[in-house]
Image: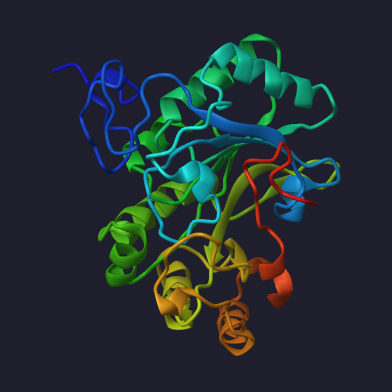
Length: 307
């Protein structure tokens, strides 16, 4: 039997939801059809130093998401029931907008929340390449990715930048509406590690050309879950990984959240996670505890992040 192309949107199994819908005629969990759905394309200087550099990264923010986290800071574009009148759905226009930023001297393109639009992402990358543009491609996902899909991206994606959100399935079900988050994401991380290893390859400007960086956002009251994730990575992947440990959580305005999430991360609980990170020997970055006052995007603005 001939193996089906996983990028075939006539029976979509791109992400772990495996809706199986024909995205040319209907939509599944993500409520995105066969055309791309992009909310914003702009230079972003707020990423890790090896990604942003001085000029920033050309970030392509895909709209909607295959997770519906109740506290999402990008909720203006990630909610699957929303649609912005200015969102882009024409691949040529998207590619032209990316080219204009690449022509300004930016050399890295980041695709943010690509898990449900991987086929569209690949079309965009192929169009860029055919036009003579060969930027570094960053796959910035929530970690809820299928191994089979990631295998198809080997040789296309230069840098994986996944989240690793939860260890406890109770938390993932409560906050992101999926009970199998850790099972899925842990396998995805291992596949990314198989492709990239733990070494970051940098160019002459100190910007990443190749590698894997794992992000983890510490949630208020759940430092122990963060520590369990770090121990998992140390025991089952590598202590040489680059980890970006984030304290930037804040309760976004207008969202109905449980009391435990209606607060910032405490300095003592963040320090507790940092201590484990350092004791295990991981490399990477940590945020100042005051970072919760920054990184507050407004996607109704032409420049969502004030930097």
